[in-house]
Image (cartoon, rainbow, N blue to C red; front, side, top):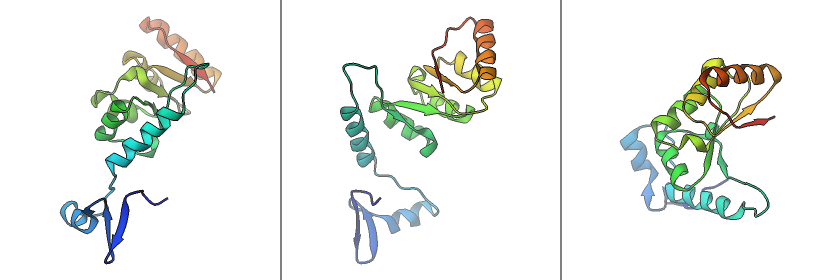
Length: 153
């Protein structure tokens, strides 16, 4: 899908008024370039249109799509929740001052280390994949004396 503000002029790509050749020269390639304003607009669109007066609903950003501290800040500012599927995702969110209670931690084959980190750092919801994981989470939460919100997949 073509970004909304991507334009081609004289065989040169621009996002809004920014020449992407100049950006590539300055920062080298390969390089990911995002339009922050378009990201924010799309996030607002989802938040505004996925509401319910009957259900407790949240718009959740899929961190596996792309996750860096600056994006955590944007997701947080736009009032989205964020999923995490690894210790690395949790660490990036935590060190970016993302509200950990707005994290949905899922993914198959979670280690005890990941579950413990999630519990100790106040992750809002842990998605449990199987009975073995449920038992491990139960033991860890009891050992740490931490109540946990879960969802079963």
